[in-house]
Length: 249
Image (cartoon, rainbow, N blue to C red; front, side):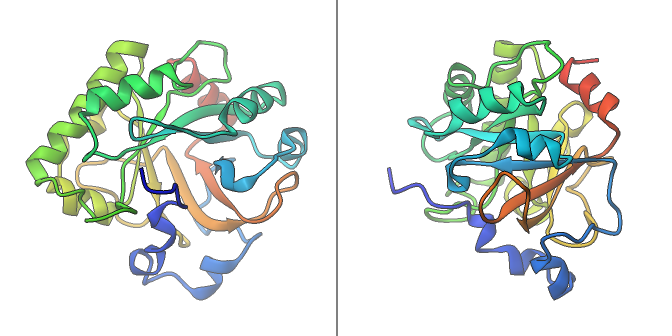
């Protein structure tokens, strides 16, 4: 496997947010104009050692934490982050960076579920997220046709649900989704949308998505307890509603 690099969305952000102001892209404390109620972050090994108590005390209430990528990579900081976030009172979920050209969706869903992406009804565990976006190692759509990509995603989602009993969250950008799946509307009746758009609003959603559940609005956030930049997010609801999602209610 090629060395694990920061996700390609960091490289392509300018193309995806042409309508955003420069301030929206670089601000570390500004709040988007259409902010939802519940603030969160997403992290991986690139954030280094995290003081999760400081993170929670700063007002962060949830986090998605990188668990796996493809079929053989597990984030080396995942176990520590996942346990420490829980102990600090942060509602957390795992995420898997998809590499659809490496294996079937089912293989990668099982890999995620076996390496941190399982679920329990403890008020602090979200269903895991499928991070499906631009390929950092080659063609944007991983060399798959639109129909093949739809089949791959469905295979992943169905396998994850069979394994855990939960509908996985889907992280994506509108441009990637519409381009690489052909405006597929299939998952949005059940799977929460985690939309990535570094701007002052979530913008146009992927085809068929009625609303967003999570919105990643900047990659240049700062949070006490984390050294350097971190992705900032909002949940589209209050903490009680987030806990209900965690508990599958």
